[in-house]
Length: 273
Image (cartoon, rainbow, N blue to C red; front, side, top):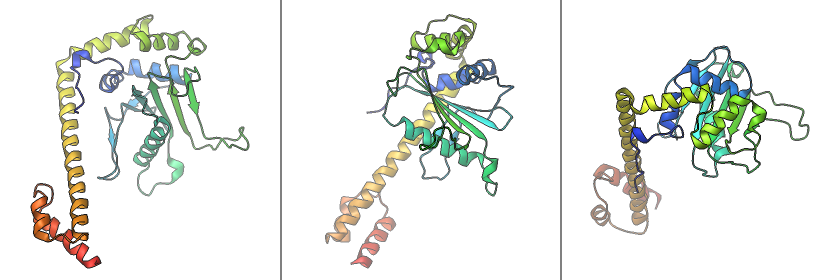
């Protein structure tokens, strides 16, 4: 079943397009990073809105919600996560690897990899520990005081934790906004105003519709590739079980496998027999 597409007027901060657009405002993104990391950041620069990273044409690509650089050898990726698919740790691992491959140009030394923060803001508690912040760095299991020092940090934000007050009033207000949409300070007021602005913007409406159309096209391409792969396996199995070329040709559409493709499969199977 095709996924129901929201109208831009119905998008909320939990929708990745809305979150990515809103965070294009430096005065919203930089304070958010500072609240989550509990550090002051001198400045940030934007690398690309909804940046897509794909290192091979057939590899699983990722589209980053927010991807920024502080100009001091650190990059930050912030993602909104609304569905608990039980794969968050592996997803973070994949994102981190793809980001590193994108950063490190061919021929450059590994020491030139920038420090990276991969931050997922979830609308559920993935670990059921009641924490608002889960921070992960690579440590030695035999000596927990020994850090690997790979400069890779993963942070998961859970607005339903019970210790948001420990992170400061601003962070606590942001958690309340995520939970209920309630505006309680200057930052969340700016955030809510920007969400309303995006909803009514014709420019962002066009961008949103273009993104939806690209996603649909990519889905169609994926479905066609899946159909071709299935047809390839079916043809191969039929030939292995003694079916004639003409019989297989009649059973598989030329839209899925051309005559040349089917002949190549036939020749390959006959060569193995």
